[in-house]
Length: 106
Image (tube, rainbow, N blue to C red; front, side, top):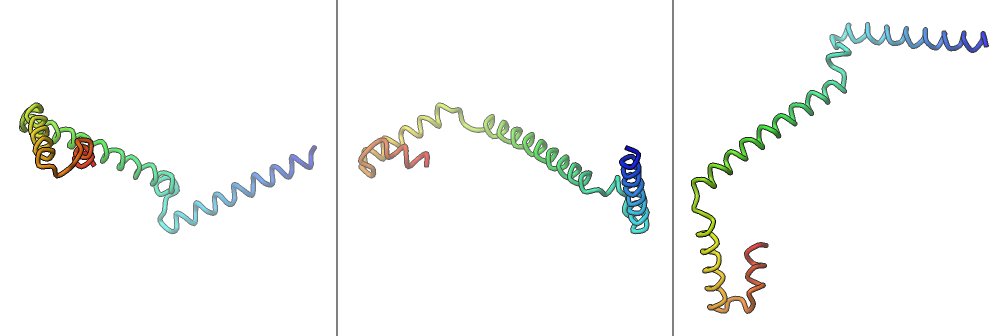
């Protein structure tokens, strides 16, 4: 029992010494463990990435709203599509209406 406590305390002391040594070596190099650790850098880049995605999403939604508000109404676009489909079928470019939908949507 006493022996186990002694080995545990030796391990703790060794860990403390290595931690203190590594911190002093970092200070000599100019790196600070809390500011430049890889986990904090990863979190910072992740936060930047999230904010850029959020900002891009907001601008994209704004652009879509602007274009849809400035563009023609939907029923005219649908009317144009139906006229194109009927023209293609009448000209017998495609033998089947289903093929036309495949051509348009693929």
